[in-house]
Amino acid sequence: MTAVESVDPVVESNGAPLLEARNISKYFGNVIAIKDISVQVSANEVTCVLGDNGAGKSTFIKILSGVHQHDEGEYLIDGEETRFSSPREAKERGIATVFQDLATVPLMSIWRNFFLGSEPTKGKGPLRRVDVKFAQETMVEQLARMGIDIRDPDQPVGTLSGGERQAVAIARAVYFGAKVLILDEPTSALGVKQSGVVLRYVAQARDRGLGVIFITHNPNHAYPVGDRFVVLNRGRLMGNWKKGEISRDDLIKMMSGGAELDALTHELERVLDVPSEDLPAPGAVETDTPTPPPAG
Image (cartoon, rainbow, N blue to C red; front, side):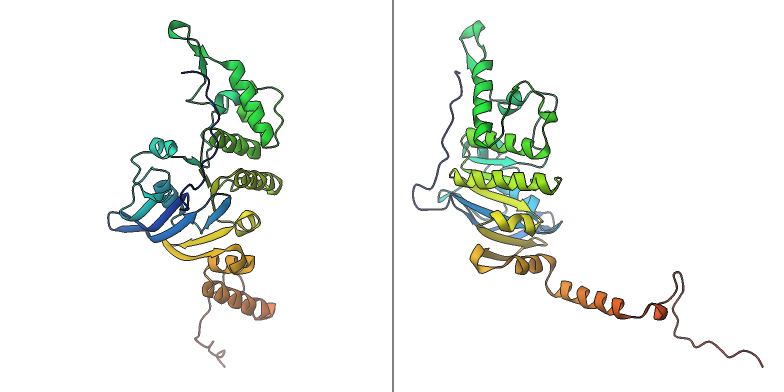
């Protein structure tokens, strides 16, 4: 095998979405993990999948990335029904997933992490070896497109910031021909500034022709970059909207349960309106039994 060449992202060739899930369901024994989830992902578009913990986001992306197989429904790639048997098979079809741990080795150099498992080689037979110069130059070039200036390709990837490590994982997926990029909670462990940096990388991936699936529980991160919003709750699809069809406030309300949030708000307002002298003392036990008068 010779030096690996960059593959341009594949876009729709037949008018069909890059990726489409139709009424996807998954069961673990008697437990319903997700039920009747439908999503479309097109090129040059960020589809945000939102939901609280336990909403079914992780199960859904594991089906899309080939970790699990769906039990019901249809999974289509470029309009062709598909059932992946492994993540490697999904990757070969252009479905790249960047999980929260980023699949990087902190003590390895940036260029080794970039080509991890797919190192370019030169020479033949017993003289075959890793083409270090090509790998380093390619990594520097690809990260420069993401706005990151790498001066030392041998720098351990663990010395990069969280946002920069996300950029390495995204650039790696784009370079190896991903047409759909799935990002699993890329901003969950980052501060405000680093989250903004990652959102910029998400937008860049979209502008380079990819279809991006952005998994998050934070509507404030999803709304600025999203083109379509899918909300899950307890394994069910709550709704699917284009950006012009729902506001940020409505998205937050939908994620938080709507009526449940209103009830909590009214309860908190009622508690805050009670004068402090009327509140029971800490540790006091409330009782409806009247206190008997003192013996006379």
